[in-house]
Image (cartoon, rainbow, N blue to C red; front, side):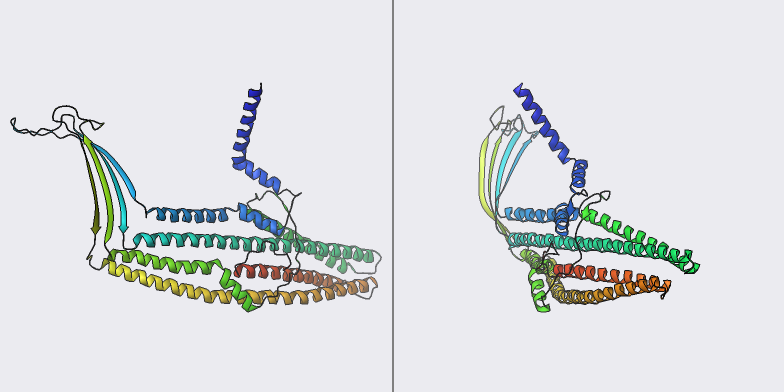
Length: 453
């Protein structure tokens, strides 16, 4: 009985492991983890994207592959061991009185060869160093991919928050216009307002409904894009939470440039590219030098598969050999010379590209810092504009209800209030987006952009 229970438990564990590996089950679990009951903040979204996004996974696999390539190149320094086993049978027709006879069952041979490179013109060393540099470069490429993913997730997350705010603003505008329509109809019914005011109010309500539908579609589109970045199905509707609030940034241009030159993976990759190009030239230059290797060989032969003596004219024996060999391609019609020059010009090209990248980094940092400062100024201006628009709407509505203002004044004030809300929302979203891009331009990882610093 106990054994049956253990077998059943083992079967359940195996079945559970198999289901866990099933893509459909993983997708279902992701959907469950992203259910509306679970709140996903910006930091949570970034963490999930870095863990589940296929693009980041591909970059991580490439980095691991480069590390294995480095280990493979390191193995070339050691000796190589080779073995061979063969059989041959020679049919020899000779004078009957000649003592030379072929073995009756043929000849079986087993060879063991050990070869150790001694000097390869720095080819092996340069190849290993190049592989090590490539492994470091791929690690930097992985960090670059992670930074790019963080920027894309944060920008999309901010666009989603912007669209949510726009939906709220358009909903408030529609509610205001519907209230105004009710008031206008009431005045019209008692003969205090013309039919034209009612028609104008109805047209504005219809336009507001259209704008609200468009805002909701933009919000849903941004959610679908965010789901894609996080590796979630577009059919689920997670509860993304956050707010567009001001996060102070006090660093100046010099501090941002210093951080960028110290942290940016692409600058590190450019330096490694120069070093790799120099190693490629060393590999080409290795053909100028002789190639020296040591070897040890042992051979067993016999006329049976187990190397034993049998049959007429048979024989068996062992032979070993140890030695060194040097080969030198002294002249190859300029092949190595021009290949060396080609590699040299490639080194020069990569150095120019590195210098140009440093200049581009300086421009990138300054332009993004200016974008942050510009958006920060727009926030204060938009805040004042919103306060004035709200006050203007309240005044226009009060004048209309007091029969001293027009319906057009109320509708115009409502439209300007909606535009002022959208302007403030856009300024906040643009500021945070520019801040996220600036952090990425400096090569800094800030998954939680809203955290105070």
